[in-house]
Length: 201
Image (cartoon, rainbow, N blue to C red; front, side):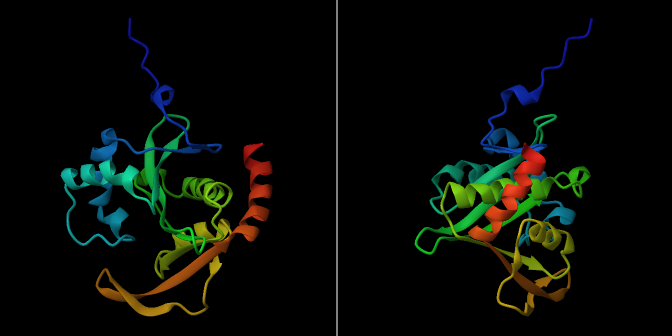
């Protein structure tokens, strides 16, 4: 008789709960997964990675997460399995100005284009505005990353400052434009009220 496989979900720590995903702490057990993602060209083309990252460097990064005063980073987990599929965070948190920047990756490529990033971003923004009392969250997008820009716009982001920074970043053999986007607390909370009623009720 086969033993019933224990669900990973039972052991999960849930910090913010959505309908299909939740945000939780990143642990040392996730280092192999993080190392795989950060070295995958199809994942890191939207990051600033220009050299290989070892498991030792990823372990050091995970151990440092709790000591970063101006950064909060979460794993993105599927409710159905407890599997971590990505990483999301608030960075450069400035409590005087009430601002921060965000970054998100869905590292598991078979889980991309399913709306998980949008759901995770909504949960993160709710935390940023209603718990940390920030007022403006910024993000930057390469001109070839239409998927990320679409996700941000679904979460209430708009172009911040008009024109992009022309030929600002060197990626994949070309200098590409960099767009600045931002969402303000008041605008997001209106969107969150509708989102919560539709997806989290």
